[in-house]
Length: 219
Image 1 (cartoon, rainbow, N blue to C red):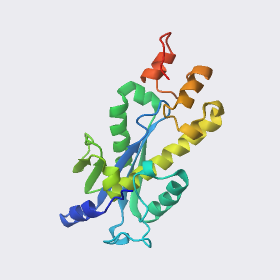
Image 2: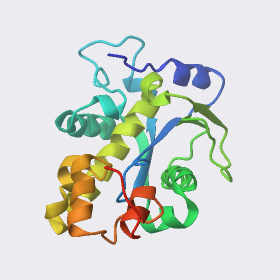
Image 3: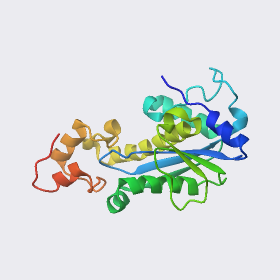
Image 4: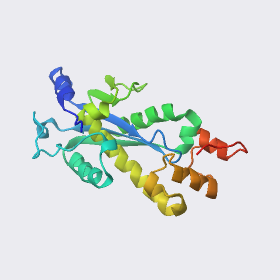
């Protein structure tokens, strides 16, 4: 299993960027619900140079490799050992209006704007920087697997989005949102075909469009 490091943050701090933040989003692929991003400024004083089992951040990694129970535990540690964090949410309606790529960047910008402490430098997961943001940035492919601050942000974003999908599961129990979190699993697609398209489904996504027209859809 690959664990991220704090090396890049230390490098940026040495360059004079004292408040270094990591940012990531979750929920690009799902057929339903929002895209959610988080930005986290970890406290350098709590990190240390070496990863060891007695460090709070020992198990922090890309949220896709962390099970739900452990994500909840790690989220508490991250909140306790960060200088600040922000969460940005962009709804399914906005996704349909501006497209998922722009919605993802908007969610990231919202999460940065939600910080009380303005970062001096921002490390982003992916290929793209956030436009119209007055903060120096570096986009890193697979950053959630490489950079500790980005990994922490991925966990925060995932937990926040899962809470929203849990609420959708209570409202629409026949769709199984608690299990698939809105992703295009066979179970989810079968539920849509059986019970119909919900208001929270992303109408701009091909499968949902197919369900709203007489065209054939692929499971």
